[in-house]
Image (tube, rainbow over all chains, first blue to last red; front, side):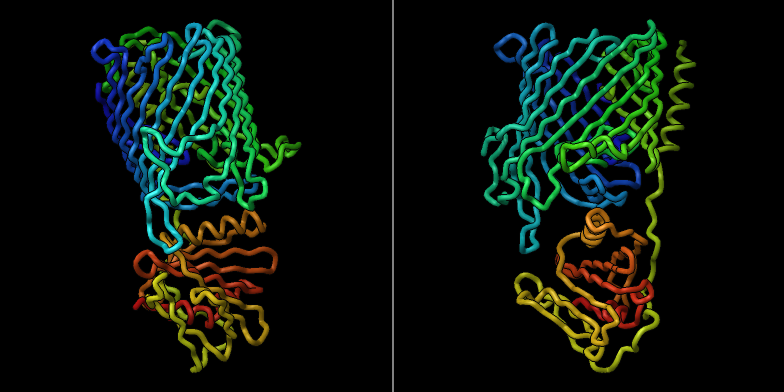
Amino acid sequence: MIIPAVASLPGVGVFAGVLGSFSNINDSGIDAALTQAETIDAEADIHLRAFALREIPLLIPGLSFEYWFGDIKFDDYNTHLPGRNSPNFTIPYKGEFDYFLLHPTWRLFDRRLNFSYYLIYFKGYSVNEDGYEEEIGQHSARGEFLLDLTDDVIDPRTGLRFRYAYSMEAPEKSILGKNSANVTDDEKEDVTNRQIELSLYLPMTKQFTLVYYHQQFEAAGREDSDEIVPGGSLALRGYPGNRWSDRYGMTNTFEGRYTIPTNTELDIYLISGMLEGIQLAAFYETGQVSPAQNGDLFKELHQSYGFGIRALIEAIVFRLDFAFSDEGNETHLTIDQPF
Amino acid sequence: MNTITCRRLLTLFGIVFLLTTCQETPETDLTGEFGNGTGGTTVSETQALTEITNTSSGVIATYKYDTEFFDAFSGDDPVFQLLSDKGGEGISLLTARIFGRPDTACRYVAAVMARDEDFEIDLTGERENAQGIEFYQVELHQGSIYRGLYCADLKDNFGISVSVQATSKAMLSYEQIYFILNSITVL
């Protein structure tokens, strides 16, 4: 299936392009996906080509891996500074890089227990001290543990989900590439990031589910550096992505989801399949970042709220969320539930 | 829910989506040529020429300043130059070589000053000097400290950043400042 697609990712841009998806190729169980997309809004100028092979089985039952390749060029990508006191003032960048990912996952007990390893190789360009661009290649790695005690992987209505992710020491070289010699000492210096996410799904009625989501992150290492070392960024939909980041951070979200079952065969605008339901959602989120792990994480909280509509089409959730904050509004058009 | 209702719903949300996402690019507060500036001491005929070099010491651009108004302090690095007014009015000006996009350099410095030193960003601009060189401009203040940042791409990915410090907003527009900005010439 190859379809035209649009996606809105706050802080990145609004993309339009084509999306290809191929399931269970030759009955191998392997899925493939590809996309070519470009930004269509004035906020950014980004060109993206990506390809993925997923669910590639390995010898051990439950063990599979996926491979991603992305070629990304941005002539105008706007981002904010990290830090608790980061101003609402964007900084434009241009650049080009390739992104490679190897991601083995071991799923146990009917996907309830998942162990994942992410090996990322980034090949891009950096401006050296003489002002000339030079190629730079670097690995990074992280591990992830996921406990999923929900009733549904795609659209849970009851249960809990816990995720713990942590950065790991990456190899100097792998089948993806080799670290370049020009990586600076600062870039090599170890920083350990940890992040936990907890989602609780509480069924209030047959159609209404209340969801509580908690996210917490931290970075350890380079404590003497004058630079801000981010441990992650807040998941607040009313702000651009990566708007708030610092060494420590915490997000809390309440979201109500009301599902109207439809079970209608759909074949419109190149979208075909069983429309199982339309879901209406409303949410309220707070969060804060801090350079230290103290009470500041609970002071002057950033707030975000909004509403959304989701179409549950077979194993895919199409999500359109409108979110608001003291810095404006953001529109999210993407697939998958936010948590 | 029938197909017609689904189609109407999708169309409605498509329209709402387009209305909320297709926003215009944020406009800068100032555009156009710098002009000659206003106020302050008139520029004298006694001027010095400073060369801006690339990393191979090749001269890529020059600029002038009034030596009757400014004292110059240069370090070992030929790229940086600090000019300070002789009369003690409180105007100083620092030039530095930059690489890459000029708006990246100026906006990054402004954002760091706002974050770490509590400066308020007052305005941004896309300006042009008398030689036709395009500058990105940001003005900030913190109490009675006023800063003007001007960044331009000159040649071969090398550019210049001019940082002006003054004790009032009006001083940022003095003729002496705009004389220097207008004199920047690519060779």
